Image (tube, rainbow, N blue to C red; front, side, top):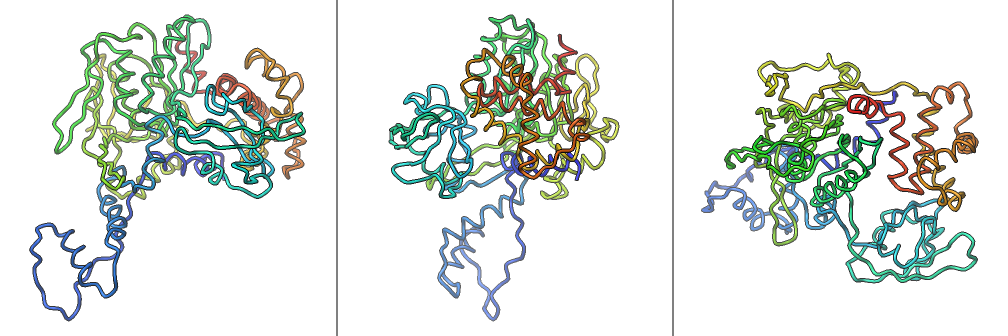
Length: 531
């Protein structure tokens, strides 16, 4: 199994779960009851007629509400890959990433050696305010022992989350303290940030990583831009890789900050929806700044709106690999029982008139497998392997040729990076050893690392102490034998990922991305182009 197949195995379920909720095909047809005379129901709605008929005539008692709940996904599943029914029990969880917050105590945690370990407390969150610290262990929740009982992460989430204003008591074990420390935490709204990080790469180039487009994304973006402009920002690298989309409005507002007033950003149109154009205003904060956008095969929907608006208006460079190809617009309808329906009502089109929605004519299963099919056809290695339909050819105002029919093709293609891979790297990655060691190392040296000024100082600290050699010993104890030939092949990747993960445990994403980007070929190409 090669590196990209492993990449797909790990990330495909996660990313598709947030982006594609597919329907289920009906497996068999309904048959008329045998030996019964035919008659016509008076209701004009056949579905209601069938439900009533089953309810009144079926051989056993039937819970019609339950039957309807099971039938709706089958019905929706025959429309398109992105229309979806959300049951009431799942509604809050599914909408949290788009709303931009949830209610809880404000901690990131992991279960280490059957104990709940606090990775990070959210700054100014409920736990942070009462004095809980990174590295603390939760031993009891509301007087119930949760350490050494094989508790699952889902159970921890259920115990710690709750309505704003409610209380939860936790007993904390802290390094250097022989006794448990008791805390009462008042739950509150916890922000889910959609901008992972924003920082200056040099005196003029800034980097902004947007992970999704939620209700809060535009506000977060403006705050990031204003912060970086005080540090000299005039050139922007916007990273949309892995961003599966979200609200169209958030993406179009960000595009507006870069485009001159009066130009097209995007338009939508559907059978029951007349053409609706979004036009740039005259108030952009970044109209005179340079911009490069990074995309990959997981950049979808709102990410493609932003990239398409920049590309079709000849406003900046798009670098990476062809994007996912989701050009359908969903509108959400709420029902009285708390459930909802996200129904595709229109297609969106980039300024040149491109629909970048890839085909789903061959069924949802093939649609979902499209990324793997692209890989096996060699698309991630060679740009020339991509087949374009000349009937879907468009031109930008400056005469650049762009194509519709399946994603945004970047201006500069960067192949999937396989240099430095080895069996050793595969094993330690598959077992999650880099992640686990990084937490343990950061936990062991938390005081020393926390005293350091920034990620650069942390990187130098780790390099000086050769933390990679400690990891190799750790991995050997966990069943991955030391192989210096393979380690040397992957040394740069191993060292960079390890140091980035350790730094994240101290400085969160501000410590993670600046280190990780040192070996990121897509970012490095963007930096060469824009600086």
